[in-house]
Image (tube, rainbow, N blue to C red; front, side, top):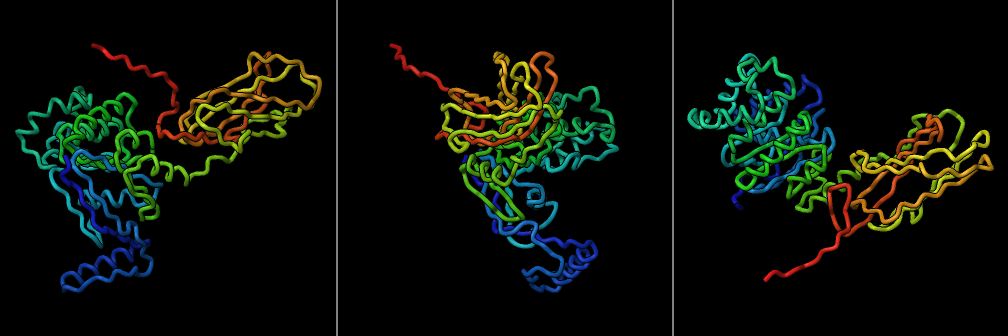
Length: 394
């Protein structure tokens, strides 16, 4: 623990947008290096920095979460770390054997069987045939491919390729493990098994984990880098702060009317406390509706609350409210007591339907946004209150 296995020092990489210019500049760079000329750091015409001045260290037992939107430069950085491309500036130092999952099916020979690819990939990492023999059955069992292990990889589904690739990379227990989003292809059961394996090898491995799924990043990372347009937007050991910075780049609050039969209109919706509450406080929302004709009873209202990943985390509906209406305009105030949602920003959808037939009348997604404040950082949907008692035992 504490041994630095990955070190990047002011690493930069530039590309040309045009293929012909890219080939031309590449040829010039080769000629310059042959004659010992120092390459200019300035960008040439149609060039851009895919990665610019990134530095970090990852020690044995640490996991670096690398996050950012598509095109931020994550994949370029990983390819440099894995040795597939060289940086134009800076130095990358890697110590030990490297297992990498930076692209679905990368490193597999499609005409070879799964078994043959295990030997190929593990040998490339640096393991001997004796070491691979000792791990072979464990890899096959982990990948759940016993029945298909002697079938050509080109006939594998994407999920099967992920299972085999992760099994090789993780079960061989390399010094460095690089994972780039490929787990998103796997099913839930396999993903859980992968995280269990990461937990098992992490004390002896330096891990770089790339994902657009922030709960996954928060699950394993103890330091984080947020990239934006090739540069570092946030870097540090405060993982929740980095994830908050990532989410702040999104705007998911644009409301969207999914269904409207014209019988009812939402006139207004308002939330107390400037759409901000503290953990454990009541959430109060007021709706004003207008109908074409006076309805016999108040419609059924359904509120679905979603987190920053747009996953539904809670639902509320007024199935017990059977009040008679006397006007085409009416107000409904809903109070959700003692909100135990974890700290974060949430959106909610509104559904309106007829009580008797339950036929839909109105559906609006992302109707509004509210924020729950808390001193506790938790990347789970709910932060439950509990009573803790200490009982000393003699």
